[in-house]
Amino acid sequence: MKDSRPTEDNTSIRRRRQCESCGARFTTFERVQLREVLVVKNKGDGSEPRREPFDRTKIEQSVALACRKRPVSQERLDQLVTGIQRQIETMGDGEVPSKVIGEMVMDALRQLDSVAYIRFASVYRDFSEARDFEEFASSVQEVAR
Picture 1 (cartoon, rainbow, N blue to C red):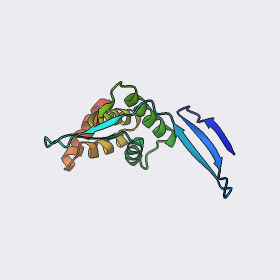
Picture 2: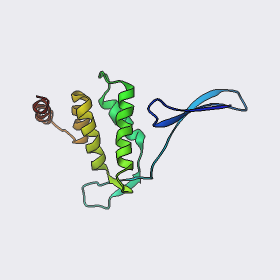
Picture 3: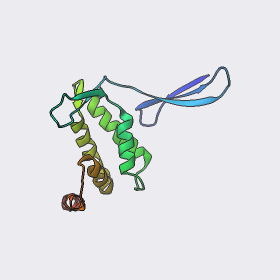
């Protein structure tokens, strides 16, 4: 038995299935992937860049961590990640630098929640001292005014 229908935001297909051998029921979500994209990662030490397939779950996890205990719904997080994924897939390039993806996430979080934005930036930009947080937070406050 199989029941298929699009999700509310039409970004994936929800399939309700039943195992033929044991009868257990389960749900899967299938997303359309417009094109295969490789993420180019530079170590910054002059060595050859690494390439790996784009992985949506990495963005989902980092955004969820940045938004932890913030008043942001799971639906908004899913929309944010889907929007970034669509931007990446429609860029026209088969390769996207990880730095471009990081900046896309930063821009999206800046509009969503300032605390999540600062949390993500602290890891992405590798803040090492409290002064780094202070300087960045003050620049965020200036933009918000």
